[in-house]
Length: 246
Image (cartoon, rainbow, N blue to C red; front, side):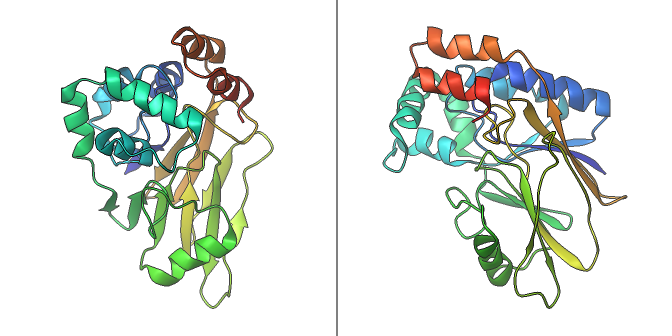
């Protein structure tokens, strides 16, 4: 099976369309979306609809949870402003839709969540020690995550005290040949707001037959997405992050 795996679209329609076009050309068989379709950007509903051709599986992120509950206590000021802006504009149909998304899903020999299995919505799996906690506390072969907006992976070999970090290449891409004897936590980065210094959208493909995971970077008109944020009266810092990839 050829899976497309993406995360953290964050209302960025221009990035979503570019990724959708790439995935269609790549002939993926199933699309998995790891949460945070909403927040920051101005086209949350359109970003859900653009992936209709794939009959995608969506899981819930912390921004969806904040939309549903109205609780923004743990968010930054800019994030809270964008969530409140989004909540006022999402239709009841889409609010009901995202409220039904699960926090974790098991597919074949891998599991999906937004942040980390310790706390699927909010945990930041961004260090070897944090990854080790997850490896120790949960049984899984592969876990795909998002949330940090920074693509990276951790590989744990049997008998090793700490997982190894698998870093992206200088161009922001990754290619991992998954070994049967190892376990993996793989962060697929962000479609709509990468934070690794590369503004190009992140888009992953996992081939379950070859056991190859590849993270691609897709260019899109960042200036259009940034201008939409400014025109909507949202914080200008959100537009700057898109343009700079930070």
